[in-house]
Length: 482
View 1 (cartoon, rainbow, N blue to C red):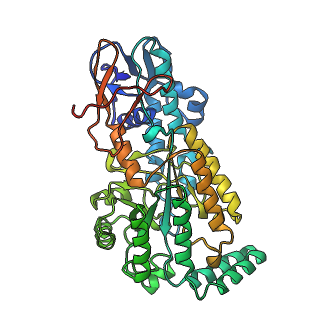
View 2 (cartoon, rainbow, N blue to C red; view 1 turned 120 degrees about the horizontal axis):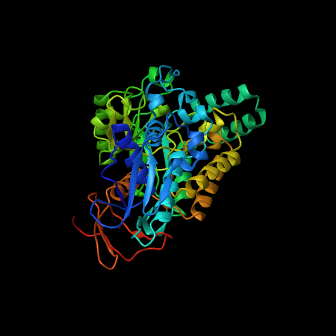
View 3 (tube, rainbow, N blue to C red; view 1 turned 90 degrees about the vertical axis):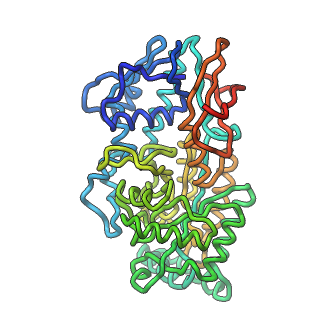
């Protein structure tokens, strides 16, 4: 367990945010009472610190008997990275209103493929175990059911109707690349699908692959009224109340999967439009969504999330790269959203997505589905090493008739290989609920025999559990009340 030295409190909201995030990700059980337990002391340090230097010096964490020292500049750097401070100050945007990847702090440092903040938390956890001696040490189990990491499979439903238009656009994309062989394959598949519904087949293929391994995924649904202008812009392409869209939403919901909002271009930074689309989707799905992800990832970091929170959402999953895969916030886990304007956290959590199919095929020119899956599994293994949550995006319209030969089989292979790595599979809402409960857990008492009482103030469908310094499960159970 760990307690903050009362004489070394954070001096700013940036230090406070960095400290709270680091402690949360470290899984160390915190205790506010008296007793002989490990103490965390914040100390002054030389400015500035860089990601490269922190990685090289193990985040400048110092160990002594019963105490861990952490420099304040490290906390401010953690907030800068995980809070996307550089992006929130950006003045350049692409044609979709997105911050350029080059303005991300980790991309600038060449470290976007590493969950650097999660690695700092691992280092803190090791330090606490190293200095504890005979003092009681407890860590919160990372995930339910004894699982050591988690996976969120998610799907952005961008296409429901007018599928031949999307096939034609995809053929043009392949023609620009000179991929004549793939064009021929797509043309054959499309010709054979005119009497069928390749969009529905794609949805059924995804759900079937997940059903085999009892995976519950999360689907983000567009919920505005399409016009010629929205379709031309690549925004809204289907009416959510249409029979085809309702059929998909019903299949997703009846399978126990999550249904959340895919915010259209008009939402961007507009709480009222977010709220209207949230209510509209709730009327169709039977319950208002709690989560959101922006279509085309169109958002202004911090500002868009403030509008989301004001509209009633409790989590977002937009923070990820459009043109590459990796850890945009340096975190392979759930975290609160930092507002640079307000110098504090917003009332909304973020599940950063780490991998997306089209980041490779569209932006990197990699057309091999097997290569997409290899990239996904590499980042999943990195996530597993820090016991975090890997969130990936697979578009269900990636079918042969819509321009992606081999994609459905590749997705089935991805689900199979992820399942063999034994993660905790869950929807975004389930993941957020679990992490909020774990984040709020605190020790309330230490018995003379060293047993620990603890509780959480946040509800969860899964029981929290404690582990000792070597990861062995403790028999201690959370108390019902504080």
